[in-house]
Image 1 (cartoon, each protein chain N blue to C red):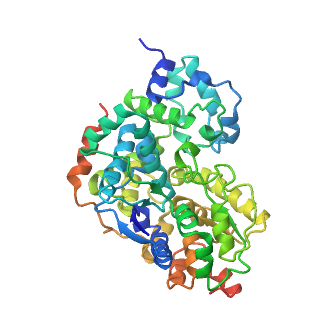
Image 2 (cartoon, chains in turn orange, yellow):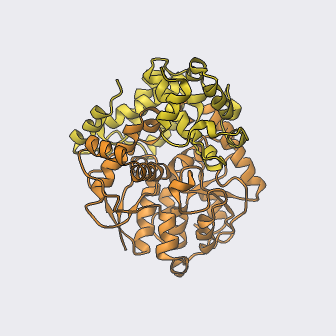
Image 3 (tube, rainbow over the protein chains, first blue to last red):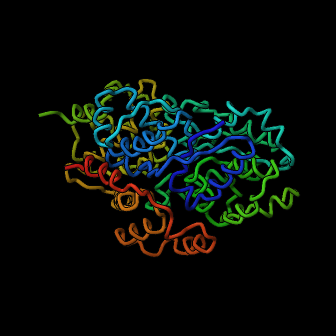
Length: 282
Length: 175
């Protein structure tokens, strides 16, 4: 299948290993990515916190560009995904706002392309059986808890691809890769998001709690699909409290025997390589 | 003149907040309630009690991290997260400003960075924030580590058609 691809700003910077692993996994699964031409930032938390119309217009500029091709839009970053879905939701409900935003952006928005997360695409379009068929190295001994965070799933009316309180799709992907997924109750708790820069002390407390609960659940790592969650979990735990954190696509690429994972793991602050070497997965 | 409640509801443009029956699920699930001077449910009450200045001048409205747990769990579909966005925007528009100054300064640095290049360049955005906030030295070691690993670059690709990005900022500028 062919999809339009919106990497977003983080995936060209601090989350480059997410971008590279999404590309690698997509290639291996036969998903062809076509980057949206000349895309711009979605505005993230900063736009919607301070200026509602700006927060809608910024994603719509990219959606209009995506609509030149009649194919789904894949957005790996949970924060970008959420802003795109929110814009789609508001414009679908409010024709007056739609007209105003079209005037702001200077283009017509049709609402013709579906905005999708790679988790959703892999489970629903590729299928877990097809994924399983590509696994050459089962992730035996890896005991992840899946951490969805906030923006992939909430609000449920807007995001609509997995249960908002007890999501399961990421767990299923990890199980197919051969990991021994641990159940826990903190899948959708918040990591502190963008307050990590301006209110660091609050975020450290939140991350420490998540790490403690992950350990209590018997996990030896956490798995996420969000650059903000990754940054906070990987860098904000105090002392040596942190477990390694992975993007789910890094683990998928590793299990499928793709090239690249070791280089991506080197970019993490909490080095996951000792864990993987101990399990003979690297 | 409109009441505070009327004004907030008008801007939310959805379920009126007086539909809240004060079950406090929003507050029970709020990850930031512990750090807030007024919890989310209390903010709803304060709006109904016309406490405009107290609400807009509070740190609470800036500490809301938009995790959307409140709206997900509200039995009456009162969009507390959207309400917090509305309150922040009212605080900016009416000149009250932000009690949590650095949170607003971060948002301003972030948006200025988009306006400049269409996409966020993380290092230049962070330098801008640090100069605005005066918080110069925190996370320095982490930043250097990321530069060394090649995660940060001063020359990340930018949007080419900047006219279309600037147009959006011009047309959504708040008076």
